[in-house]
Length: 91
Image 1 (cartoon, rainbow, N blue to C red):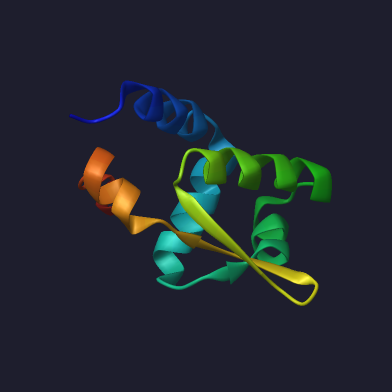
Image 2 (cartoon, one colour):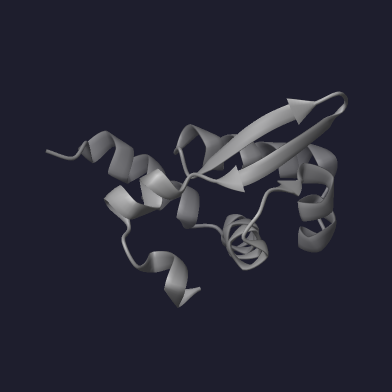
């Protein structure tokens, strides 16, 4: 049985235009992107972008990895396949 608390985190995370832009960009790129690059695309501040990345990460929608001083984001496709099959194709 799927976890209802996880569903709630996912839908709260997706209920924001900036976070949807992040998901859409990552899906279109089909690869990881630097958080700085995504922040520029969204046109938001560093602290605001960090909040959005944390929210998406806590919902297991994205994975964050750090290399030196740079953080990279990528989609967690397992979460989308399990909880939201087909959603990415609608973006």
